[in-house]
Image 1 (cartoon, one colour):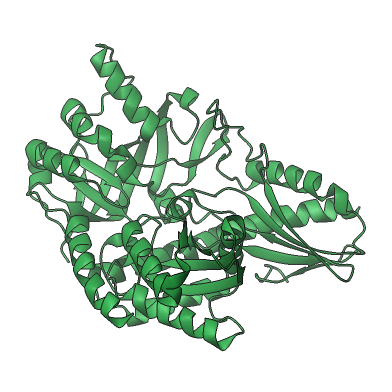
Image 2 (cartoon, chains in turn cyan, orange):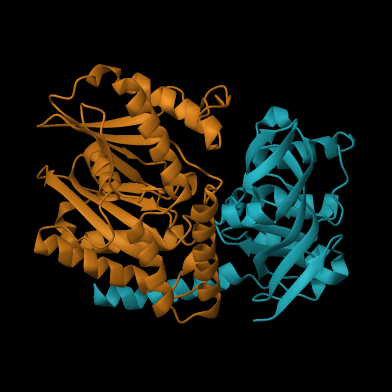
Length: 197
Length: 294
């Protein structure tokens, strides 16, 4: 397993060097966005409105963090990934519009996102679902939070991370999707399982 | 006095549940790692182990989704303050949400408004069982949303028999893939009616991994389903491997001659639960976790 340590901003060129099965750790700027934030960001874009912060080159994390308010600021306590498939309907346009090159989530994404990863040079990485304490430990700072009216899990959290990972590259820029490849294998395995029933 | 003991115990149970996995689950995951042959799967299991150890050592919720708050109560008929329990547990949930903290996870389906403190209509949900004696047993069972989303019930054709159950379960786990945060524990509820089967499936998750059903025929089916579901190759987080299911627990009820309900409750590897027994004199005995400092 090849291991890379990357720093943001992560460019299209950086993303195109990686392939499924590579393991990466990221240091730098990351932001969280779930369903409502994806929807609103794209609505803002369609209406010609500026986002509160530039997203270019930052890592997009599918996550609704567990947050504690302290000393007038916020601290991220636990922050594992949420199911990425719910965001598949937004992601191709999101990648294109906001110049995203690294996405982190769990459970994988579909053909539309895979095609956008290929076209615009982005990778999708799996962070182990449920490993929220470990993720929280590598989140060093909450730089800003926007759209808190969406609720804490759905808001845009801008974070500073240090060696965030391990992240498994699961969709690369070469049209390979590890989840799709495993799913195909699983369907083949089903006939052997049925034969034993 | 007893009100305060119950409230504080419930808060402790929620904290134990979300920060430290029970021993049977920790052992189950470590045993799975020993047998896992796939490198990516081993990497995922190692991350899971590192994470739950970090959670326990630093009192940090292992997963940011601290779930929908559910309690299972076994109430002795002579326990003194039964009717106040819902109120006490609601208060405990609110305080626990702030102290631990828990992620606010109670949303009104119509207004989409998050209550902010994990309470709301029917939430925390309480499952009641009345028993003899004078003690109260509380199990805190915060249930994550990812694994809840793949839980299923189907009314099988009774003619399909046990073979039908096996196929349904294999089909369902393949459909779910890595979405419920595999490796999972499967709670299977068979018989009764739709509501009963689902209740039994969830209740089956309370039984430790290491303990099979008391009836040998049911225990045999649990073993067989464990082997069959692990032949899928889904692996931890759906990234491939030998470890898809850590355990299968079945509970059943007698069925209507014309129906054959089978429910599957998925439980992610972060199988959080904690129990304690409270006596009427206020003594508390923790059943699933060692209390630090004891």
